[in-house]
Image 1 (cartoon, one colour):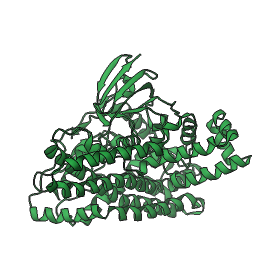
Image 2 (spheres, rainbow, N blue to C red):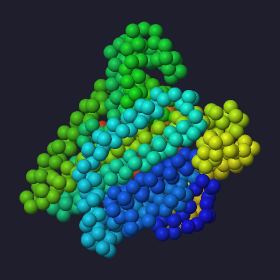
Image 3 (spheres, helix red, strand yellow):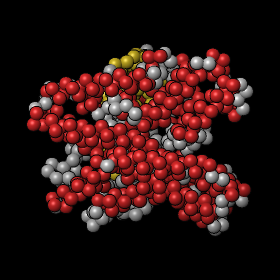
Image 4 (cartoon, rainbow, N blue to C red):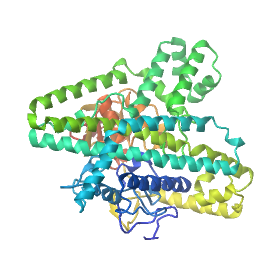
Length: 576
């Protein structure tokens, strides 16, 4: 273990397992994470890591280090990264033959970097594979059970009167939410691993038996699945816009009011139309209020607290033409997938059809389930925020901290001490000020995409956008599109952004809560993400061309420039 930290809330390096990447990590937690949120994350991260080892009966084969030592999802330079070294050690436990390269479907790099070796004890590996295969085969039942558990937990968290709780009860609520997040994340891990494994199996079958097949076939038949959870926000917001469009007076109000004005009308609906819409909107928040940019980070507000993004997305959808209906886009992609499936079946030798069909069924089930398990995990994470917010309010009243947002610059042991009345105000405020300085310094630096320990931080350098250029990335959703670039530089900026129909969304990352922006967009370009990233999955559900893995693209493309993208080749061309 090394204590050479870049900032005081970094994870400690594990000298046994430690190869890191920022790829796809920013899709989940963009930017620098505040100290308390990082500490909470580490608690449940250890829980699911150890829980997986218990599930698979392998606690004697792989030791899971306790916080603050880096497990699978640590922090370095204040930023969330993925320790693919320990992830591949997980994978080796059930790998036989040539090992597994499933990570290449999620992370930037190559097959060699993300291929695990087979476990030396083949008998144990086969037993472990049987255990994890059982998780893959029963994933739908696990998903449905976890959905009910997290919906109930989120509902109770939203409706609980935290002001009547004692400080100790607030800490208990935080701990319960943290434990729940770890338990629920196990299913997300199993869905992600299984989806990647069987997607790789399908690719290998096609390469061997139909060697001249179009390269996008593997993506096509594991997409367009209909009912994918991360596409639900875009579809539901579209439905709200259609509800409004059918009521001309309400539609006029929506077109003319600011977000604050819309919020005021929702709070005090003055007409039958507004009352009807307020009821529809309340049902939407009940179901999807846990969503938001950086939604698994408890220091961030989500749609139930800050509705501006939802309201501006409704306004954008009101301007969109009927051909942007996400339900219809989804149906078209499903039809395209089914056509390719039929063509593949007609070309494969009879002796591999059973293997292919089995792999396809599980790839589709698990890739769809990955988006559902991510939603379940996000709901669990959202139960962590309310007790912290209430403790913050009390600490301000007691003079321990100056502002409620300062609570996120405490460490978890300090928050526990504060709840017991044992945190000195002067010391707390000095620590908060010091960590804010660290936070600002970390924001001025970046990490390499892939690195080992020790690693030097890379100072951010301002990049001048150019009016004419061509870039090569990874095509993650096929098709071509041209339009004006709408550059969104951060998750925070996305909250107040409304795309015009036909624009090309250019962003550092996207996640499920960004997907309402996909409906007016003609195409999507992001800096990071693999073929099974959340951005790629939803783009393919809606048939929207998308390109990933062009680092710094939000600085390279001028806002408003004409952009042409090819989601098959990964080419992005910029013109004045």
